[in-house]
Image (tube, rainbow, N blue to C red):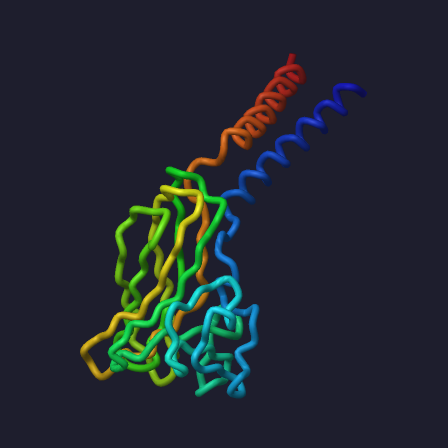
Length: 224
């Protein structure tokens, strides 16, 4: 009886250890990464001139009353596969590169994190997004091209990069890059995710190791 109970207990420890590690690695550190928390309805099914107070979790340093936008599915015929809302950062010919930022907390210094996001052009080819880290990481900025699109953000592309935290807080920024062509304007952004990708914390590893040791001992006793 004791043997069966002990074996069940070891199974529970193993399962809890595995779930703890999985949750730690797969937790999204971004708040409101799919821009669903605040209905963009000021102008019907869209909202012009977004400010920081309009988008939970995000800071918008500059707004001209038109850009950035927030769009719901159906606005101008647009749709996103990542929920029902997305943001549009800026117009290529505006002469100004609009941005949106978020400061993440709870990161571990020296750990590697994986950033993924989706971008789209309003039409043509190709809107560009610059991803940079204003604080908390020395990882260099990168520029990503959105896929070629029909009218109104018909084609979304998923992009990703890794960065290393140099602080417990990291400020991430997305900025539209002004392009010289007459196409590829109005950069759409959605589905921002940041997850830890490196080795889990020592406590979780110790729990998992304990579970494996107990299972191994019990198996040896069963065969003896």
